[in-house]
Length: 122
Image (cartoon, rainbow, N blue to C red):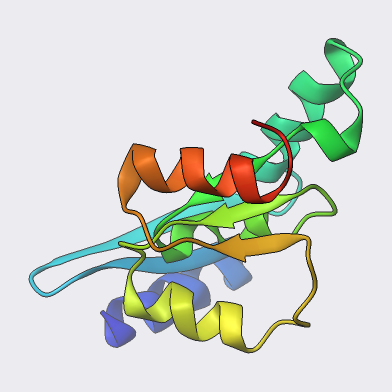
């Protein structure tokens, strides 16, 4: 995937296109997401949060792979579920260890429920 990512970065740079290239997935199922610098999951979360006038402390991001990093890196509370891919876990360990992001023992939807409880939102 590294070669494909480098080639695509080069082509995008030649065209002055600003995107985040995000590799996620495991084994033979690797994905390359092309996310506009001014768009993506965090921007969508923020749009909906502001549209419905939801306080940032009550709007939670949850994820399990590297294509969730931009969203999980926002100012809102966040949950990394127990079945998260190794690369996301490594990213989480490199972040400031605060109460804003919780890593759950439970997987998938149960991990989200556990995270909401630990964040005091459920």
